[in-house]
Image (tube, rainbow, N blue to C red):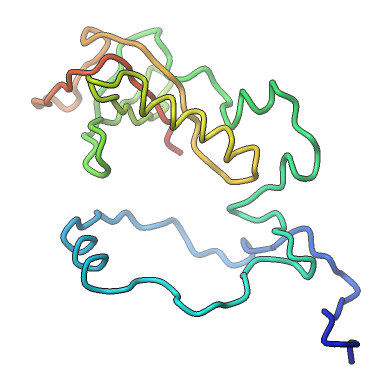
Length: 190
């Protein structure tokens, strides 16, 4: 029995890896968001857990072990400035060797955008800044993504890209509204 209610340690403590991938749950299902449900839920209900509960996915020292959603990067080995600036990016963004195919409109979130496929076959989400505040949203998202990556969270690659309408081909052919924006950001899709 631990003295004074102290935490009891096991022989394998502290756990540094949460094996949360042991069970294959399959690919996630794609679901559309409901603005009406979100509005009603957050206006007339109180979603979430309201009573204090112990954290899940924490080891006996209260640390977060590596898992499918978290990798202890800067906390376990100090990252260089170059590593933090690069963040999760493994490429230079969409290939500019040929036109990008617009394959789908972006329907969730508040920023307008669409999905493209570049000449390598990689898929990206293109999001636009408000015309009155160029680089406001893209800069905030790109900077915060790099900081969250250093903190340990798995985040998407974000690239600042510049292009003109001539760089785009709509596939399959359909009419898309073109936002009046001055800067764009491409987030790589997995």
